[in-house]
Length: 447
Image (cartoon, rainbow, N blue to C red; front, side, top):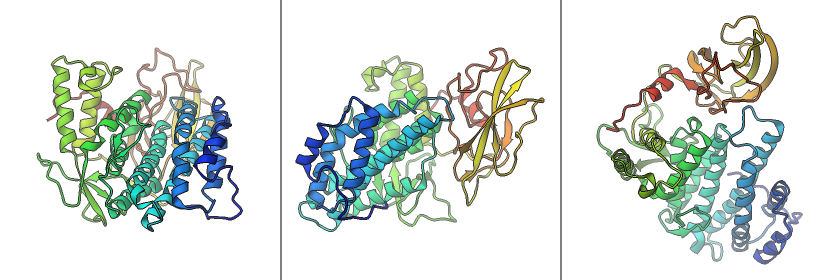
């Protein structure tokens, strides 16, 4: 993680825990946007301010509760909204990510102090590593909530922070995190596992409530993931789940022979797989989700369906792609075009901005209503059949399915389909036809 240069010119409103607490009393938390802007501005200054690691850690710990409050409230301004985002929603997203960045940068400086054995920091190494991993994970989680592709730098920062915890021999040391919803006992390994498992569950396929539910489960189940230095046999021919701590990508099952991992770690999910299988079996016998520690809001049959989905994402090898994914040296960009058909309904299409200025599917003569650019990430796939927005006709596109924002409410901005022409339940972006068929014909068996 790149840190800002320390400067004697930096003049934050607080320099230690006492002044930080006094300043926080005057922050207007009732005005969430203003409070977030104030916290961001002062943390940017504080992260440039030269001070010892111990007082820096004390300040950050004192600000955590206020930061989490404003971040949760501000996320409501861009999460679960129609896509593409408005300028105001984009601004709320950017500011939220920037504040997570500054919290992470502060703990990164504390981690540097622990590595260099600054006074009092060796005893706080486990807490510092857990906090840093948690804030990187929160940054990634809010990308998922906005259906944005997580930058490779975030994955690299997550792996490097866990590698630092291993180097300091504190990866499994227990710490308390009282901002967790239910389980306050955690560790750097648990924080790393939560970030990895959230990325592995194909979060762009999940609705907002499902994302929140998975985050709730990972708070409880993160400890079920073990990190080993040698390959783990999970049985049934399942390839090992490999994390390369020197990479900038999400872990995957089975490292390609052409690109062996430089710093491999093997993630053992056997405990998690057993827990998922047992809960699904009990749900099918009529046990209530609440009695299985799945929360009061989780109801059947959606609870069972989501657990089956998570089991397949976490504990089974991925199905082979029909078309090999190709990487590009520059981000693939696309635009949204809204068309009017016979004055009865409007549809949206995604086109490859660089290769074509025309829609990728043959439509009747139509009137162009609106065009907006959308960044779609670095990976691009060819000849991929996708269902885009609320269209009923799949078409060919040059944009990666995994790089697209996935979920759009049925009544999206600029899209008002006729119920006679378009099913109301078809409201996801980037669903492959094969994936959609697979979900519709999901087997009831996990093994």
